[in-house]
Picture (cartoon, rainbow, N blue to C red):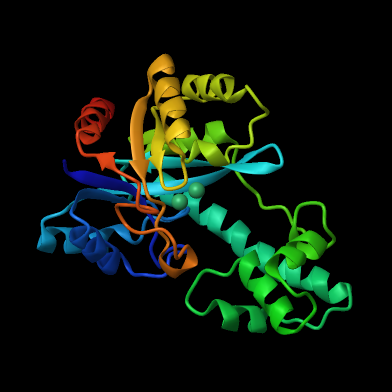
Length: 283
Ligand SMILES: [Zn+2]
Ligand SMILES: [Zn+2]
């Protein structure tokens, strides 16, 4: 049975490989269709489409938008969207600006705590990756301020700690609406990461469906067989589409491979027909 992979990151967000390399890996893994879903950006899509044409792999334009859910984040995937839509592009640009503003603010807070650290040092550690808190943690480790990334987060960087700076994130319903406005399908990413209080996930997903949600990412690298069954029955119960993907990032998540995740992932290609059918009704 053929497999697909509808959740892949590239160097256009926090992945370590350019789109063409991700498409090549997918080809080697016998993936017949894939979606590039970079965080808050769609600029990797044209390179993926060109590589897909050369290798005979179908490329579905995608996105992953971070939204705020209580003290944590909830990610919404978008598929088949008009990725060049000017309104969507403007909204994504605003999101990215808020992330870029945040890093120097974190550095300033660390400096005010008497820690010798500069933004240039963090950028040097990040290299070509988009700068984030893991890079700040690595500089703190290199300078022996902390002995682990966990300590960096626990003492300084996590929510509620002295160098924490909140990000401006949209509400989940807004992220869904942005995708819908660009004629895309909106899908709840990796429900296992959603920090819904025990027993309330079904209600949350119902609310998201009322806001326009089309599907749930049932198949995912770190979902256990039991979770996969649970999310599948949730999708059926609420009448939502089923999707799946690896969340491949390259060296950033070294144990996750394109197409097969940690080895046990299999997203069946028959899911694609239903997604296309639903997407065609949105146009
Ligand atoms: Zn995510
Ligand atoms: Zn992702």
